[in-house]
Picture 1: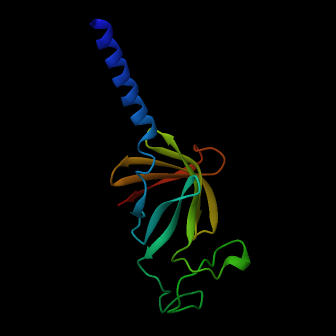
Picture 2 (picture 1 turned 45 degrees about the horizontal axis):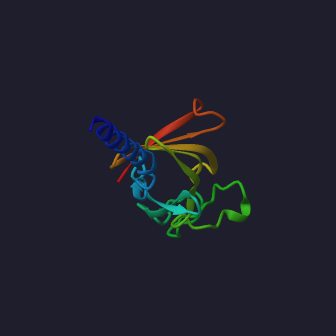
Picture 3 (picture 1 turned 90 degrees about the vertical axis):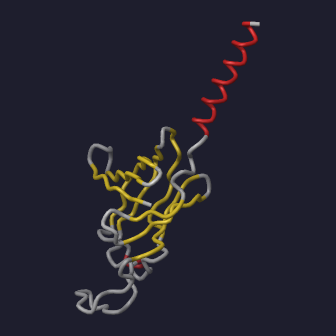
Length: 152
C-alpha cells in the first residue's frame, strides 16, 4: 500500500512541476500602459515569440506648437535612424519583438524600440503581478540599462 502512495505522490509532484514550467507563458498577453501613461502597448504572440505594438496614444497628433513643424498631424516615427522609416505612424507601430518565455515569470532575448529616442535595446520582461510588468532595456548586458514599469 505504501508503494502505491509513493507512486501517486511522485506523479502528483511531476504534474505540479510540469504545470509550473509550461504554464504562464501567455500571462503577458494584453494591453499595458507605459510608465508615463502616454501610450498603451498590446503584447501578442508572433511566430514562436511575443511582440508588442502601440495600440493607443494619449496625444495621437502633434500639438499646435510642435517644434518639428507638424501641428495637428498624426505622430510619426521621426526620430528613427533610418530616414526611410520616419514617416511611419506611431499608432500601430511594432516596438517589441523576439521575446521568449524563460520561466519564472520572465521573458528574455527580446528587443524594444523607443520611438522617442529612435534607439533599439535588448530587453527582458518580468511579470511582477497580474497587473504589473517590469521592462529592462539594456545595451550589451542588463547591468547597463534602465527598468520601467507598465500596468494593465
